[in-house]
Image (cartoon, rainbow, N blue to C red):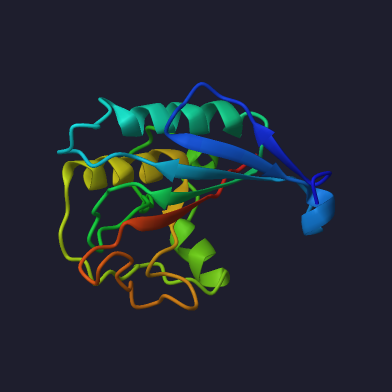
Length: 173
């Protein structure tokens, strides 16, 4: 097993990265998984700009890896808010058709995932808003409340919160 899984060293104390070999997964490219823990925004252990630091880590790794998944405790409450942006046909000629954003809603449906995810946690916090922005800006999708086994957005912590969040990057390279 050790020949297929390798730790990726970074400076971040928020995420531990591991690369799983494409040979082991029988995929076209390696999968990078980041195990995340972000201290709560109102705790003594709060890290200023924690989500920005996480986003910078993601951006650095996305240069070399097509498949990236983040799992863990983000302490980010997002309710059921949308985590991606679609461009609707526009009358403005600001960008050419080839520059338009990808139709993520259809992609999710093709993968048998709900385009609008569900969550029993109806609360939001500052970290949650920041996480949603990161998702929208980096083609990440929150899998909680969207995939088979959790299409209802079940609680992941003491039946009152959704804290364990799984994000999957859909990178177009």
